[in-house]
Length: 313
Image 1 (spheres, rainbow, N blue to C red):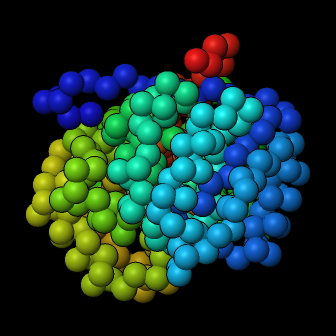
Image 2 (image 1 turned 135 degrees about the vertical axis):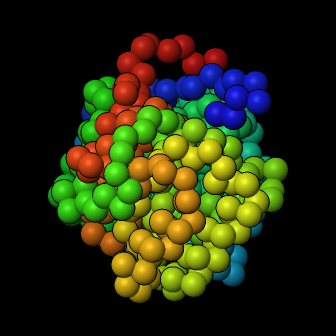
Image 3 (image 1 turned 90 degrees about the vertical axis):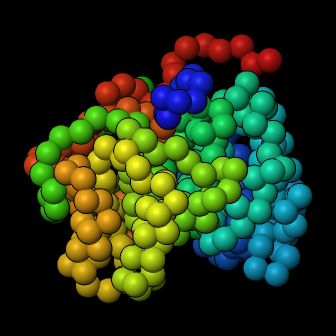
């Protein structure tokens, strides 16, 4: 966190047990019913129960219902004592529109695993910034439908295991060598860029910044990173972790853009198995880790889940 701001206590969500209920939210775009049902089946095959709120599949244009409807579901899932974790149905766009309608005091006092990626990056970032809650960059229900065994197994472990996580980029590329320790932040580049200049702009000083994206031309990636840099969002970043940039052109060009954006001598590791295509391994956000660009690893310093028995207010 920014040392100029009051320190925010880091909150670890409780670990799940087999059979626990996971509530499903739809904060962004409307979702495909077939993919959703197959994703629910995949989640239940991991040993969890899915709680699907009434009218979750409402559609308003390209969104999963009105802004108020989508926000109310998230608030309701955090307040529901039977719901032990929350997964999102789909990304797309829309999370930005509900930020002012969420009950951050409720989220702080009733912490739960909150999982998603892509447009859900907006919520992952703001939840940590506003409450200190560690969140999970992980598949959404519709991508879980076609996820491979490695992703599904890793997701179950991320929900239940209190052991610190280490992710290895087996085919990783050290764009800039070195080691750095910091709070892991970030996610989808386009979604992070949406927060620039808003009251919800993340404080990335001292962080290890995760970036991934899909279907963005190199000039758009350059434009987004440049905007964030000029706005001061990237000042003081300690290290950069690149997931996949699917359908974004030549990776060599993407790497050159990233290197040019971060002119300070900070480690940059590319090739982490995180993103829209292929394996999308779960990765805690808001937790300290050590990035070793030479070895191609991101090793968390402590568990992302609490195992303490907690009385819910």
